Image (cartoon, rainbow, N blue to C red; front, side, top):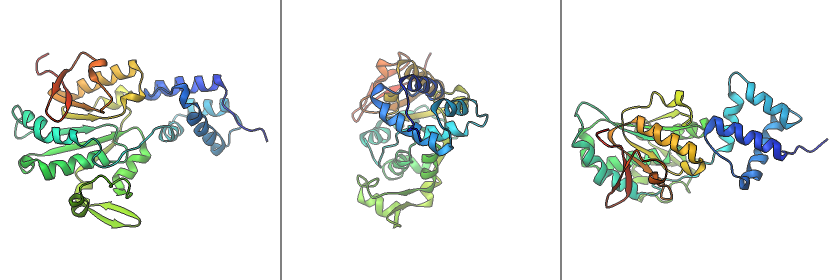
Length: 279
């Protein structure tokens, strides 16, 4: 039996196709990672060569196999309270400013993208419950989105490993989790506090319904995009935000290098990016 391999031409074709579909750009340094997962799927689906399999992926009407590939190709490394200084900034600086211009009857809306397995969105929910005195006075909606359907399923289940909760304050772990089956199960109240949705950030049809957010967390995603995709993402967030809304990026990312649409805001806990109130 001939051993499957991915040629340079195959890699380029797949890389360009996957970029168009997801906005994610694979450097050549990711060849081994990409090739390994492609070969796994070719073998699993019973095709004998890349070109047959690639044709199947491109023209499958349901898009089911592309979703499977997307789940395999995306990296979802995270844990609770990662870069928690941004949660401090949310509670101490961002929300007090938002309330100055917010109507009481309107919910405060927070969008987390990418969701990964839910740790970030649940960390935000716990931060609000424990550290924001006004939480009982306001309706808060937390929407957590990802292109990967498998991680969204995990997030909804709310079962996490000991490694995932290692950085969490002990009080929170005791209050919001129950130890079971070699890990920790998050309480139903927190599971119900977050809505998990499947969204492709590079697809305008997917993001069109996402509007009127006060805060967007998009941490450590744009590092996987090229300049064109980053700029498009910045414009998507701009459209999704209310005037005066805020975007928080990962510590190695800078909106200033991506788009001139936003104002840089330097708060005591973090640097964030704001959609101006006046166009």
